Each structure stands twice: as C-alpha cells, then as structure tokens.
Amino acid sequence: KSDIFCPHRPHHPPSLPNQPRTMASDEFISSFFNHVDSNIELYISRLAEAVAIPSVSSDLPTHLPDILKMMTWTEKHILALGGTSRQLPNPLTTPSRPLPPILLGEFLSDPKKKTVCVYG
Image 1 (cartoon, rainbow, N blue to C red):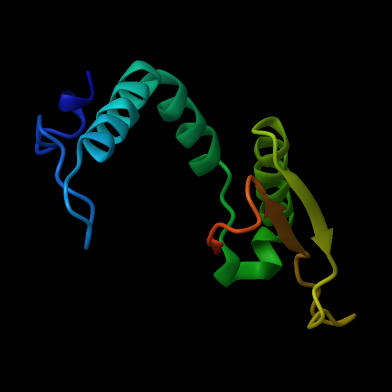
Image 2: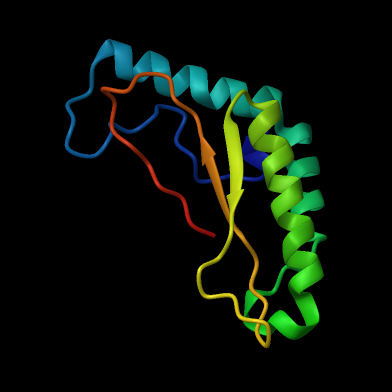
C-alpha cells in the first residue's frame, strides 16, 4: 500500500546507521513498515487534522489561538498514546507579548534508555 506514497522505499529494509544488519533489526524494520502500511489511512487522517490547524509561530499576533489549538491537539494524542503531558508557563511571556506555554510530553518506558527530544 505505502509503495504508492513511498515508491523509493526498498523492499528489503536498509540497515540502521552505524549498526550491522541482523535478523532482529530486519524483523523490526519489516514489522514497522507492515504496521505503517496497515495503518496508512489513520496516519494520513491524523496528518490532515494537524496541517489543517494554521499554527504559524512566526505570526503570533494572528495565530496564537491556532497554536494553542495545536498544543491541545498534540496533548490529546500524547495522552491517547499512553504518555503524560503538562503545560508549563513560557518564561518569556510578558503582558505586551503573550507567548504559548511549553508543552512537555513524556513516554517513559525505561529510565535507562536514551531520551529523544522533539521540538516543533
């Protein structure tokens, strides 16, 4: 299915950067692409929802309400996926320049694993 949207995706998954190919990594990558292929309509629908919210941070006076709406949308999805979230006040907010809060989402599965920070 996803070959329509990703025609250059190889049928045999590439090895991960700086890691030798193993049977386990091939199985994981294959499982991942199978999952994506079987849920493509869901992912396209979620992407359509997200891009429909004009959260243009470079135009805060016009789009602050949209940015707040996007933060609420994102927080809802973090919670639905089993994560935790909280919104922290933006320390740079002033009465003359309101700024959106900082959304902190966390998916803690193993405290010994590496942390990934996503900023958008």
